[in-house]
Image 1 (cartoon, each protein chain N blue to C red):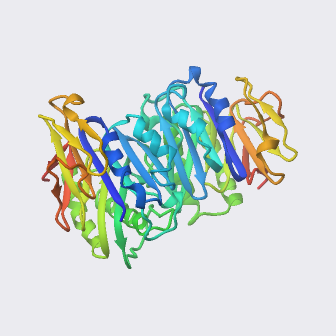
Image 2: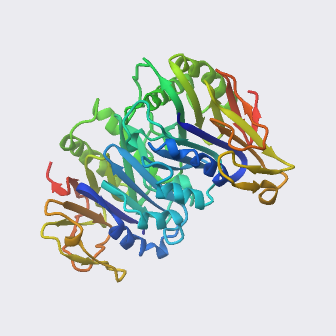
Length: 252
Length: 252
């Protein structure tokens, strides 16, 4: 199974600790990795069809503290589509003058939506096809970029239509919010004042967030499985759509 | 002035030597750098609003031999638009299921095309605006991705309309070809059998390509100014559009 990681924060925050946790699970996920960092409206997108363990790009990401309000990362175990750069998540498109970043864990069977507008897959994964369809339908639903609440309402109608075809754990961001749709496996945790320490579930790496944060910082982390042993992770229910803004889970 | 670098090759080739030459000119170009590598249809896009001299991303690009058939790089000296990630060239969009990558050196005045379709700038540069307009007009001109000759005819009608508004040295690629449009400064060189050695114009770095190539390799390099001292660079004329496929300049 692929591994997803998302981060949403109220202040630019580095994702090195969580990415190290994700990369520790890369042993069986050698079909590529990718990570996207929003900095305001801009995006840095690193993708590498080499596994995260072997990739110099992953090495750089682990060492270079890129600070971001919205991060989406993915480690791939190919189910549909060849192992190739164009099939490596996350995928990115522009809509309404904003970049949109999408990563998917799961497998869709027989999802063949009609693409009649401006978004076409470059590669041959079910994931990129679903993303293009999602962008097309969002574009039809609103004339310009709507608020987060309105976007969430539209997404809560669209996502189940793809999810009906299989497993559709999804992370999506446009730099304003992080949307997490669970089908089988997505959990999240919030880190806020008073910050404690956390230990990665898969590696003996421990971070004391109190030393790295201010009392105003708020960070939400979403992952396929809990990344740490000693924090209160919440599992999303099948079909649940969670929205994070400024490091808080919001109810639109 | 910004610096552009393009590479088109008939076999995946690393751009480390040429990128080192470009980065050597980064002293006065501290407003960001970016480089895009096509691998077949996929793209690795590295952008950093930090200058190429200071950026760990540039450092990784210089050391990690990413092999590509089409490369576009840009070192920025801001003229329009703030120094920000979303204003850092090259820009990328998807059209007809292919990624398109664009970088611009120059300055357009009073170019305000009407954007009525699916491509909108995320940042606030004249360059990204011109790129979005170009994508929109290409999308209107062809129903699906046409051949290189047909694309070149369309581009040779479109590019002068933007170039009429100022300086428009441009590199564009969709992974099939590299288009270079000169307004004031673009030169190119072809490297092919028998390969010799070349010395960077700005650094005491010398490479013997004969040791790194096979007799069938062909590589075309395009840059704002000749990057090496001892090769035969050809300057493009103002208004000239050159197209490179498989490491050869082609006449469509």
